[in-house]
Image (cartoon, rainbow, N blue to C red):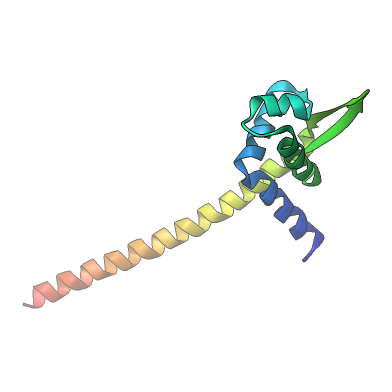
Length: 123
């Protein structure tokens, strides 16, 4: 697997989980937060939050900065913007595929209707 494909897979894996998406939402609202603060806003333990943050960190979406005894986590805006573009590109590709499938299905249905009408006209 190419490095780019691995990076995209890691991104999709990171944002596939609803708890991680919620963590991103909270971090976007707060700017930065500790794992303890984040756990206070989610129905999961601090340890679970730490594991989710590690996945988001590996995907490059968040980063932790030590301040004294605390590690404060924040969104990496450049990486989030790149991730958003990447996800939007995949969505556009799927939209194009689905549009093609719709055109094919509509064309087949139209041909079936026309054939039925021809058959009924011969009777």
